[in-house]
Image (cartoon, rainbow, N blue to C red; front, side):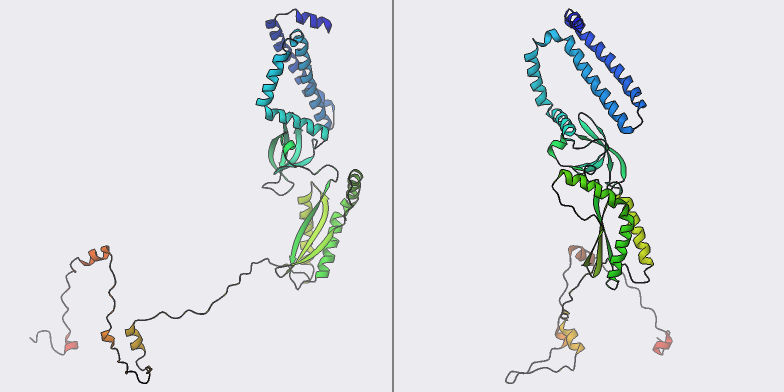
Amino acid sequence: MNSFAQQAGSLSLFAKCVAAIVGIIVIYVIFSVLERTLPRHFGRADARYRVRKFIAFFGYVCVVLFLGLLFEDRLGRLSFAIGVVGAGVAVALQDVVASIAGAFSIGFSKLYTVGDRIQIGDTRGDVIDIGLLRTTLMETGNWVSKDLYNGRIVRIPNSTVLKGTVFNYSQGFQFLWDEIKLLFTTTSDCHYAREMLMRVARESIGEYLIEAQVSWKVVSDNFKILKPPLEPIVTLNVNNGSLEFGLSYVVDYTKRTAKQDELFSKIVEEVANSNGRLQWSSCTATTTVNVGPASAPTSQPASASLSNAPDAPVSHVPGAPAPQPIAAANVVPMQPTTTPAASASTSQPPPASKPPAPLSSRATGHSANSD
């Protein structure tokens, strides 16, 4: 090592730069070959991933050590310049520095590891890689149901974990409380419905209870928390004139969709075989319309009112002159207003009228040639 440092110190600056480039290329080729071949000797996927990450990290360390030994004689004289340049780079690349700090935070605080299902912001998925700058997720949900993959790969900057909230579905208690709701008519047998839901839930969730109890014990050993009921719970509520039953249960965080499908399939079969004791309630919206009193009829022209009721009695106040009847002919109807377009159309001469047809002899009693 000392001989290498002495030989490197005797080289010129140009020769050192050329040696640095050649050395980085050689190190890159060696560790690329190791990264492709060495993980094949490990059977488990997580072990292969860890070996690849270790080889990549050790490659970066070798590059830094090689450059440090190569430029050892010049580091003392360039320390002040390196400090100034480092401060400028830290300000200009503050997002990159924050992401690197986030990577160290993820590693040391164990926020999540590869294989965990997490949610950062509105993005939820399984962690498939944790890099120095970004975390890569295989996204779940969004336009598909709950815990199913949608096929998108999301890369989130590591700096996000320092600013936002991280939800981890895999650490500690690896189960979730889920709930489904069902609506039955008020004529349904509520006691039978409750008993049926409990029976179906115990048949489907029974396999999880022992695992859930063990997993909760791990959480309660690390945190001060009360033990909740892990058995299925059925609740009843009246909603819009219907019986709304809620079924709460624990389920593996990766099997929410499959478990809901299993529960609904069994419940639909039980309702069909209940001989009318259970009936589904259709959720329809009810609208109330307030009908006011009928509006009074619109006033009619005086001529029409007089002609429609010729025999209507006319009230007369004693001492007052008798009212004079108004003839229908004396009522002059208002002339409708015309628009300029209508006036223009009326100003045109009327079309020539056709001569009247001769009257038949049968209608007049005379022949057409009598004159």
